[in-house]
Image (cartoon, rainbow, N blue to C red; front, side, top):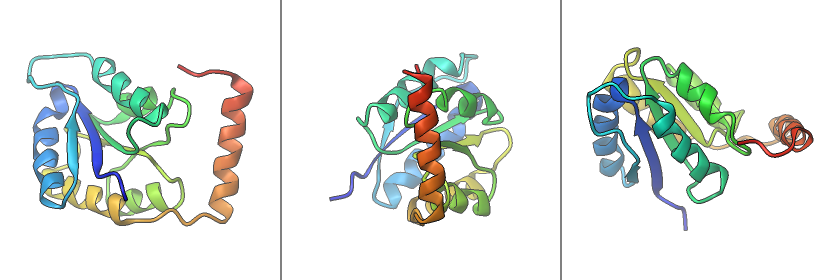
Length: 154
């Protein structure tokens, strides 16, 4: 049975979008696991992105959504973790390709860049897409080999 849990976290700039996406996820049968923040007061995005990326890296949760102002910081952060394939998405096409070509297990959205309606459709697209395998598997294997050569990541 598919794990319907999706970790979700944001900094202050993404909190409003995070709250909207939590409701959306529930409406389409997923269980959002809110890992903060729950304030609009300025916070540091690593404090919320690190616990999410750790859970995905350890296999404790299969998928996650991270949100900060532009999405750039959370993307950089999440990709420091072994086995995490975090994709910064900003439209329907990048959401689909994140899954089909890169088997992204975390998507990152800019809360100050993407509106709520588009964010919902991007998340739906990512969740409904399937990894295509084939030549893409070979490419992901090369990334895994690099991770192994580099030793333990964060």
